[in-house]
Image (cartoon, rainbow, N blue to C red):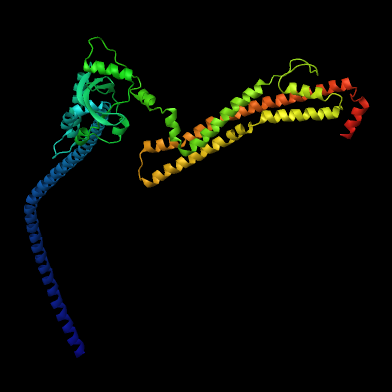
Length: 476
């Protein structure tokens, strides 16, 4: 009991103490809450006070950022436009450079064509002005300077063309054939033709320069403009040379008609360059001599054999023992008359021998013509092969032989073939004609002899009967 009472007292005391502590806690918590709310309100006020400048600053920064972005976009567009403009401008520059290059090429082609068409005396006259017009500053090598130089040359060409109206008279030197000596004299350039006359000396038409030689040299340069080959005088006939001499030296007061060569000198070159028969034979070398030997023998034999064979006249009337004929037919008649009274077989053999003798006599030396027809081409081919060997030896010995030298060597090599064919073709034709004529004569002599045998047999009463002919046919 006592213990119970003590426990009760303790519990009641503890409960009173706990109630007091809860109240205190509530009061303290409320007080803390109020303080916190007050501080929160103060912090909010502080934040509101500080937020307003920050918002203003943020707005300013956002506005600045938007302006910067717009400026960036604008400059980006400007850059894109500028790049597009640069690309377009670069394209236009490239097109302009291409057009400039094309124009420069056209000008160079014109200048090259104009200069290549000038005769060598006028080239020599224009050498220094042309070289001066082509000279450009050494410090620059732009296309503009090149075009300017070509334009200067074009202007010079126009002045030259204007000065050429009515012809130009110049002084200079030319190479006179065949020795190739240099002679001074007067040139007359009249259109595409150029005439030359030395006082009391050589005169004629000047060779026109070859355009292909200058077209292979490339672009015209000052050094090339000063490099002028000497003019060459063509081998001109005396009649034309005298007319040119009179026209240029002024030895006559009458009007002179100068010759016009539409081929610009090519006809004269072909005419004067045509070799004579003797010169062509000399080009054939050693093998031309046997060909000429066979040709000469064939001509002589063909001439005499043609007279001999064609002189034989065939009988125009029937065969008879007492008639009169010419040539081998008369010999057959005489042989038949001398053999009268013999058997027909013996007479036939005698006449056949006479026909063989006549045939041998007429065919004598005729095979030599056939031999010539067969041998001459082979000799010509042998000469050609020998000449070609010499040409290839020249190619081997010289690294770059001149084309005209090779052409001349090949031409000389073909001379023997030419004369071999010239010899063989007529020989073949003549041999065929004479052989055909001879065969016809032999056939007619055989027919003539057969008729003589029949006539002799009739007179001798020795004509074979039908039974004899049948037996001979069976035995044959």
